Length: 454
Image 1 (cartoon, rainbow, N blue to C red):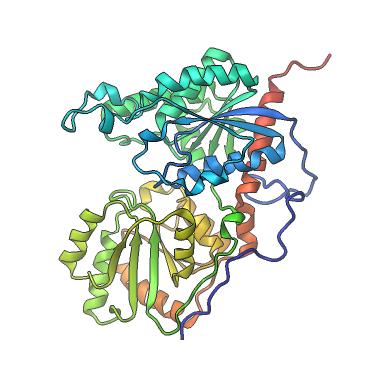
Image 2: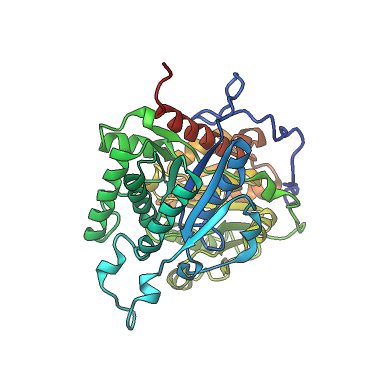
């Protein structure tokens, strides 16, 4: 028998919009009543914003802007003109509140707009391909800061140009600057290009020296930065994980087909280095040769993985094309429904990213599906899954361990005996809760700079 369907629409017992408590850094809620922030205005500098498509990063910016007004903060979004996006999709434009002004400043993609036969001067792409965005964003940002009497500048990585824009606006106006760094901006070997890495590290140094508050999505990232920059004290760091928006799951329900093969789905990008699936592919080939799995019992589906051409060669060489299937991208809500229809969900993350948590992990948990997590047991993602439950954790690089664990995982999913994530543990990661914590952060930054009352 297949596992029973899990209904993933709105849950009973959810707190009403006016009664959410503010989660602390460990995701729990304090006993004391929340303090409402004083009203304020924030300039949000974000490259990823609708109609950009293909990145989960836009959800963080979009949901902050959706819920911040509930807590007294009116956002003005400073983003780039849609021509600069590789992919666009209008489906999430309706989620932008009418009270949120969106400024789409001039900006080009050097690779697509400034190249001749695919080549362009490297200087046009420092710190990244959207460096020309500074030409439009800085004047536009200055105008909005003055027009709206902006209280604080908030910028979000992973596009370095956005961070540089925030720094320049901070320097030109003296407004406090909060940086949503999320993951690490640099590593010992990232970015791979040495010149780009030097520019990134220079921008990173500006963040450490000038930002009033720096936000991270995982505890390991905070530890890394505090070791790298001893002058960065704990009070300037805020752990604000990614999450999920309950509103996105309204009407999403699993549509199971009894008796069918187990469908194991990975939704989103698979980076050849940070999420290298080749040990997993080799394990599938071995298990197929041993007769432990087949196309009748298992279908591994990689949706919008981003490196299809490269991975398809590996799959073909291993003779597992009947097991592994590459699927196209879907709009966000359709992708959630697709994941709800899967029997189990797949996470991939290498040891080098132990200080990160994939944004999709929170949506996976909210879907309350069994999760095959090919990650290390020591990383932050493993800590999240151990807290929330529902995961089978196996090292992505350990082909033998995958071979041992996968048949039992498939059997448990088929029999309906695999543990599922706890919805109570997941609720602390709601996007609304995260926006409330950001509102308190912004308030604290502004209040800390006001002259003390005599």
